[in-house]
Length: 212
Picture 1 (cartoon, rainbow, N blue to C red):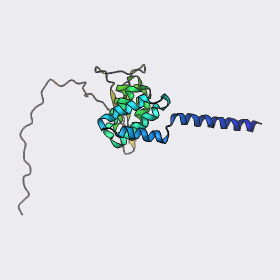
Picture 2 (cartoon, rainbow, N blue to C red; picture 1 turned 180 degrees about the vertical axis):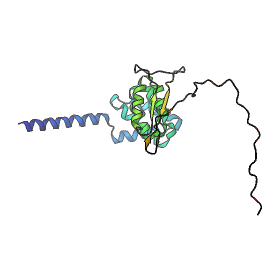
Picture 3 (cartoon, helix red, strand yellow; picture 1 turned 30 degrees about the vertical axis):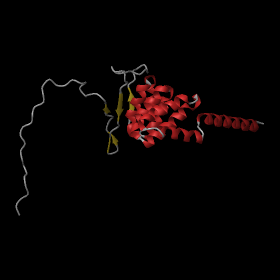
């Protein structure tokens, strides 16, 4: 009797899992249609086209639609990644972290730019975007959207969240610390009052090969 109950329970769980997966997934025809739509327009129009497809998609298909469009565009035009992420994050901020992570998985070298674009378009999701992008590049860097202690996103005077990149330094297999690369000057933007000194005349120490 117990075995029958366990079997029925397992079957019910399997059915529920399949249903949930199917709800989140797109059909092959839908995927092909999305790819064709975003790649059929000129590159400058691709971000707007992707955002339009996402905004018109059913709620349960928004994330899958966005990820499909993002990957299709980035695989063809990697430089368009930040613009596409910004456009989609603006019309659907709730899926910005997932879309930023998907984009970083394809173009990891643009992790900082992708995080900045997503956080600028969806500042309320800055912390989640940071975590999502960091998961996509856990062994190379961590992109940090500037978040205050209370968990809310903080913005610069221009209204754009600051994005930092931290890279772990390794030498000889041993960790040598975690330097931080910032998008501001080291001294906070204050230049020294003394102008730089002009260098003196150069001195030739080698002019021609010796005579044979």
